[in-house]
Image (cartoon, rainbow, N blue to C red):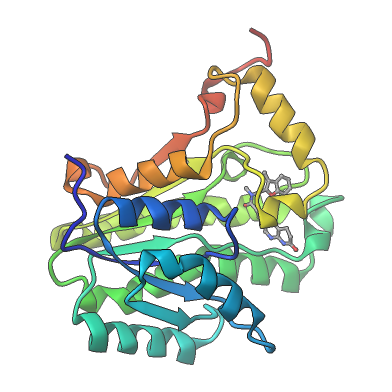
Length: 261
Ligand code: 0WE
């Protein structure tokens, strides 16, 4: 049985009710986990209010601002976790950002700053959060991050995010190798395209979704709940033998060689 009771889970990357992180948080909660949530703070506190109202039904034990580009906020987040929980079992990383102008046009036009920003927020943040969480993952644990096929194959306009996801997926393997002896498992979920705040800001996402509906073995896209269920599985003892893997939750799209039938 999928049982996460007695487990303390920190979920990052919830922006609104379409976030994949929200689907994951709900499924971890349904499986009985104690939930902590971090959000990206903004000047007017709108995000805090919006995400706070959204997650209220999960009764989160922790609700903390954490901009992963700010070392002090990361330290404060894990200081709060240590105070409230003492330890942690599950870390869910659902963070990515690239400048909008780096998600279209020629990849070779990517600026040094744009490259650095995308890799910092979308890839390095996993390693940085794991470093902060490591002293609190005293009873082993499970780390899950989100990736996308664009980190392995060329997807039009994904551009610098593809390089970031590639770095993220390799980070999963190095972290899994390092932390295996502490019984900490590290895995990724490569989700198919879903309409979210991030993807809706991208031109042509609807065409990509229709392409998946035509080509993928299951002839449909996946839902946040399906990604959430896979995350819950990976975080549970049912997945005790799985680490360093990227699991595709994409209606089978990744196996197809030709867009035929
Ligand atoms: O990883 C992602 C989203 C990544 C993303 C999206 C944005 C849009 C708004 C990162 N940063 C930003 N910055 C913004 O200003 N996905 C897998 C969804 C996605 O994004 C794409 C896709 C797909 C699919 C971008 C181009 C092409 C396809």
